[in-house]
Length: 234
Image 1 (cartoon, one colour):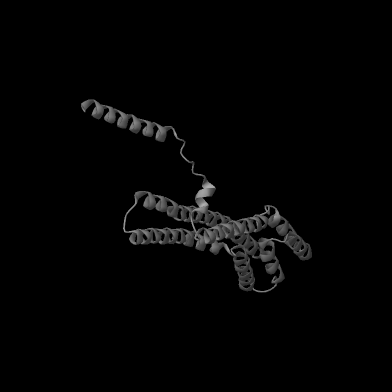
Image 2 (cartoon, one colour):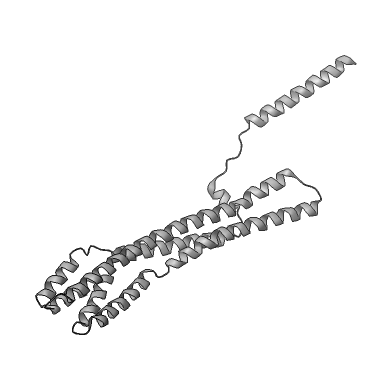
């Protein structure tokens, strides 16, 4: 009797050891990034749209702003030479061919030469504001994406958690595998939303920094232009 008990115990221990060895040696399924994204649920669709929208706006605005910041280091020097020599037509032709926010702003000032300085300053300032608003077009949408994406991802996670506990209430039993498996897939939406939000936030400030550099350049050259007009003999 004791011998049989020992044999049964030994066999049970061997079976347990074999099961543990198989569990350890059995290859675990790998988690791939794309697979995780597809497990995020319907919330991943609007998140993907927000990500695409942010990228499209960034590259469109980046190219537009980059085009507006082409080298204009000699522009004011050439304009100064034309005005000092009294060749206003040459200065106007140069600004037309330049076709940049700064050139359009100075062009408006040249058209007002002969009027009071205050009128010229006002005309330049109005054109400058219009040009800046053109450069800033749609940049604010990046800020909206940066705020909405994390919240939308969190909503997806909350909806997933509610669904999991609804299933638990129906089954009447808590299964760790069901809860943990459901939670890690639903947390994907929060992670994705945060990543999109961070990227949109960074891109938003990159564009704003570029626009601020243009504004500083335009303000500096506008002041130089007004000072040029106020020089004695002008």
